[in-house]
Length: 347
Ligand code: ATP
Image (cartoon, rainbow, N blue to C red):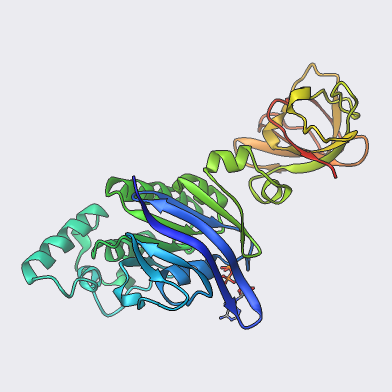
């Protein structure tokens, strides 16, 4: 399959700020990518560069094998086959649902237009409320109209900027699955910006983790969660704690919590390592002799997330069923499962 969107060595500068630096990645047709990273890392700038609102100072962007941004050429935004869905949905308040969807279809004959609007409304399940105005719709319905409007002109790529952040939590996750399903059904290439990692994991095939304008890791959601390739990625993605642990020549951890297989250790490692410990690496085990003091706990419905103190004062997270209800200050018997911990060189 050929790449539909290609971002090659792209740099965008604002006066003395370099917002993105030598970014390279591509998306195949039908692939869903997600830009993730801390505030100010360049997500919006990259989205704006792809949509043509921001010139680039180095590199090139191509869509469908056509160069749309270079250092000397900027195809106007309205001429790019790019659909946009914004955080606030940006629906026209004076137009009803079908007129909102019709908006991007000016070049079609009236007959084709009607057919297309019907197809889009049926796709997002809004046929029955096509005459309603935006203020007569729920947040989720408005979001679907925005998606139908963006998809109607059959763009080569759809850019979604925090598309679910104005919706409540339950609706967000439901819509995230629906949107993925819908994009996949029509093999639409998409790039999403979100602050919500669960959303990014649920929707995307590929995550572009940005840090200070550069790509820190480009990977599948699974790989980026389980195999972060830097301390930044380990710290930023998912829940977990990075601890420093002394280690002997056999791989035994100084805090007595187990031993690491020697072939999993970096070859240039000294006598200590940094371990990324996820909440599911430590399990409650009633008969265990290893007991750690509970520093804090949070109730998550089906689970408790405990924070447990090691002898040296560092803390580690532990996820249990919520019927394991032990008080803060008491000890919790636990077992470390070190098979999946991620190990970094301490230096
Ligand atoms: P957030 O998650 O907070 O929305 P972001 O990852 O989308 O952040 P950008 O908005 O792309 O980050 O900003 C990247 C960097 O570029 C920041 O340092 C920001 O201050 C700077 N920046 C963005 N737009 C401009 C501008 N028009 N003029 C000057 N600097 C800008």
